[in-house]
Image (cartoon, rainbow, N blue to C red):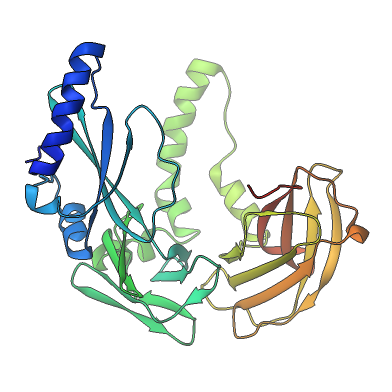
Amino acid sequence: MLKIYLSLYLTFFCSIAFSQDLVNSRRSSYYTFIYEINNAEAERLYKDFKPTIRNSLLHTVVDLFPSDSLYKKKLPVGHYLFVKTEGELLKCELESINNLELHILNNHRDMVLVFSDSLGQEVSGATASIGKHNIAYRNKTKAYQLSKSNRKGLLKVSYNGHTSFFELNRKYNNTFFPRVGRKILSPFPIHQLIVAPFYYIKNNTRSLIKYGRVDIPNIYYRVKKLFEPKDFNGYVAFNKPIYKPGDTVKIKAFITTPKGRPVKKEVDVLLNSYSFGNTRIKLGKISPSHPGSYPFEFVLHDSLKLKLDQRYSVLFDTNRQLLQSGSFKYEAYELK
């Protein structure tokens, strides 16, 4: 639980809340206060493993609301502390409203990042870093790339006066010695011939004793996988999550090969519904505006014969091989 030193303003209102709590036997304060903090203050809190909220952070009150309800207003881009009492302690929650969305592309070799704004447009003017390492924007891949790295830690991205923070994790170390070790032992069929037989005998001996069966050797699935098409990487972004009849759907797809190279060929764009017999409607063919980038838009007109309150997927396809896909909700909503 975070400890906090209260300003006089907060203490006054909390004293009222405490007096009401004594009458109503409340465990939390009646109000939750929202304080705005700057980028540098938010960065210290994100970096600190056990942060302590001090009085100096409570300098800008932006709003308050009853603690037993949800905050329904829309806060502008920034970093905010939600402060309330619970019992004899004060609870603080840090919430960031960011102006960027992070997309991680996996080429199994480098750290490759793409950022998009609230409209789904790719951003190239941001400044990104992780630890002491700056992540440069590469015009060739249209992405932020740190070569031969899968670093973990706090990703810091500054854009239009706001700094966004993202926590990056990794599945395995990608430093020099692990990379060399994987190159020597992991490639097929070296791993299957040296390491796999030991585990196959051990696991199947146990399976035969306990369940009376023997499993198929893993090499069978590895050989089978050699003849299957590999997955393409990338993402699909929409300008809205929900559309109504007559709306224009604007899409931006970024597609790379399994090795991380941007796709340059013409692709088919299909509209798909898994709810009605996997029905597909061909919307058109497009070529990339630049390698890997496929912007596309279409109108949800009556001739498409779509059903309301359903999810539809937009597929980027070539030669019956799915490259990327994304989905949206279709309903006749009304703005209040």
